[in-house]
Each structure stands twice: as structure tokens, then as C-alpha cells.
Image (cartoon, rainbow, N blue to C red; front, side, top):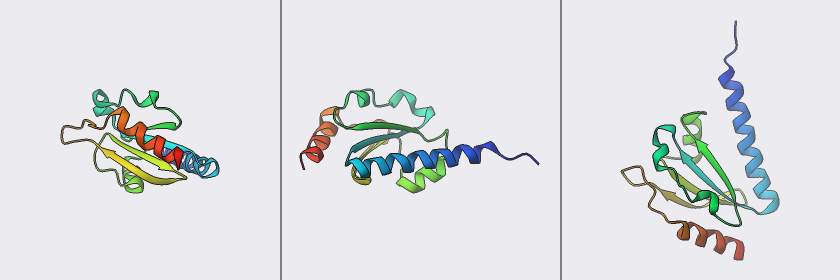
Length: 118
């Protein structure tokens, strides 16, 4: 009987998320995570990698454990940006009905700057 390799991939992904959250707890780091899906690539947040003073992670939900990630982070629309500080969600930016994020780079950077200043 062959084992399904997707379970191993899902397990590795969950471990990776746990390590990312643990590292943010240890270092008090701000983490900005973009949740999106392959079918919505045209609405990827282009300026995400230019944010300062934070760690950036991207989750393409339709590739790895979509239902599990949606449940864990309660993501209901893509793209969704979630800002974490010390492993806790601080702010969430949601796409509109057209699956485009209306938040600006300046809005997101301001939240990061406030978190670092506090």
C-alpha cells in the first residue's frame, strides 16, 4: 500500500508555520503573511517585498492544505494580508469582492512602524 505524499508535505508545512510563529515569539518580530491562491495570481500584492522592518511570508493556499490553512487563520477571501507580532494577529487586510486588495503599502507599513515603536 502506497502512502499519500501530500500528508508529509502538509506536515512539513505545518512545522514550517509553527517555526515561523515561534521565531516571531522569540525575537518579537513583525511578520506579514499574504494568503492568496494560484488562480488569483494577477491580484498578488506587488509591493509586499518592499515592506521594511518585517518578515514576509506568502501562502498559496490552493497548493498546500487549503482547508486546514483557512481554518487555522480563518481566511475567507484572497488575497488577505495578516500582520503578526509576537505570534499573535494584530491587523488583517482583506480583498474586496473583485479579489483585489485595496490596502496600500503605506497603510501596511504604518501598522508595522507602530508595532515596532511600541
